[in-house]
Length: 387
Image 1 (cartoon, rainbow, N blue to C red):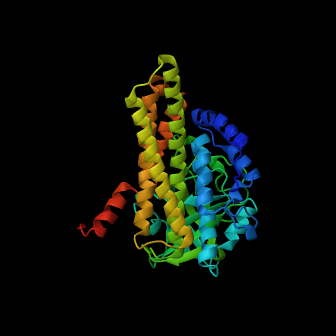
Image 2 (image 1 turned 45 degrees about the horizontal axis):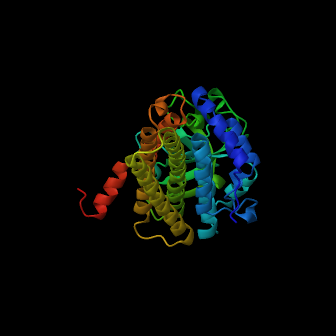
Image 3 (image 1 turned 135 degrees about the horizontal axis):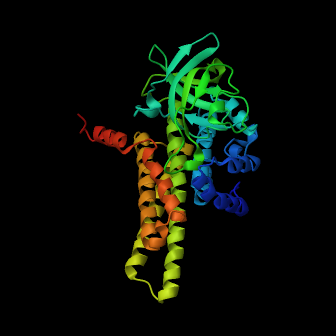
C-alpha cells in the first residue's frame, strides 16, 4: 500500500481553516507547520537521505489530495516540493553532480521557495532579467522575482540570473531560520545584501500562499550553492529539464484537486436537488458526467507524463507534451469549477460559499508557466508554421 503523509483528520483540519485564511488574507502558517511535523516537506526525499521516498507520481497524488482540502496550502507547499523532487530526480539521473545537500537540508527541516518568475520575462526558466555578479565566494544576485510562494518562511530560495557573459546560473539564496517573517523582516537571516517586498499582497485567489514580489539587491549565492551554469534556452540541461517537468506536473496536480473538490460539491448539490424534487433533469446529470470524464482523462495524461519522467522514457517532444498536459489540466479545472457553480445554483454565488473560493483559486492556473502563448509558439514551430 502506498504511503501517505496526509491522513483524513489532518486534511479535515486544513479544510476547516481554508476559508478563514482566504477571507482574512492570512498566510497558511499552521498548515505548513503541521505538514512539516508530519514529515511531508521531506516526503520526496529518498530514504537514503532521511526522507519518505515518494515517487513523482505518488507526490502528485498527495498534492491532489491536499488541494481538495486546501488549494492555497497545496500551492504554497508545492514550490518547496518542486525543488525537492528536482534534486531527487537528479540524484538518480546525474548522481555525480546532483545537489544532494538540498535533499539533506529538506530532511533537516529547511523550507525551499521558488524564485524564478520575473516581471516581463515570458521565457521564465530559460532566460532571466536578474543579474549575477561574480564574487570571490560565488555570486551576488540582483533582480525582481514575482509570486515567490512561501515568502514568510523560506530558508532556501532557488533563483536564476544572468551573468555579463550571458550565462544563466541557477542557485540558492540561504536565509537562516524558518520562523514566519513580516514583509519588512525579509532580509533577516541573510549573510549579505537585502530583500524587499515592494507590493502589497492582496490577490484575488490563492491568498494564503503569500507569494510576494521579491526584490533582491546584491544577495549572495555561495559557489557551493550554484547547481548549474548554462546557456539560455538550454533544453538539454538536466536541471532545467527536471525543473520544467516537476513544476508543471506538480502544479497541475493542485488544479486536479480543485476540480475533484468542485465535482464533489456539485454532486452533493444535485443529490440534494433530487431529494427535494424527486427527480433530476437528464441534462444536469449529463453535464456532471461529462465533467467527470474530462477530469479523468486529464489526470491520466498527467500521470503518464510522470511515469515517462521517472523511467527516463521521455520523447523528443517531452517539453511540449508536459506543457500541454499542464495547460489542459488548468483549463479543465477552471471549466469544471464553472460547471459545478452552474449545477449547484445561485447559492454558490455567495461570497462565503466554498465554490466561490474555488473559483477565485482556480483562476491562478492561468498565470503559471507554460502559458498558452508560449505553447502556441512551440506547436507552430513543430508544425513548420512559425514566422
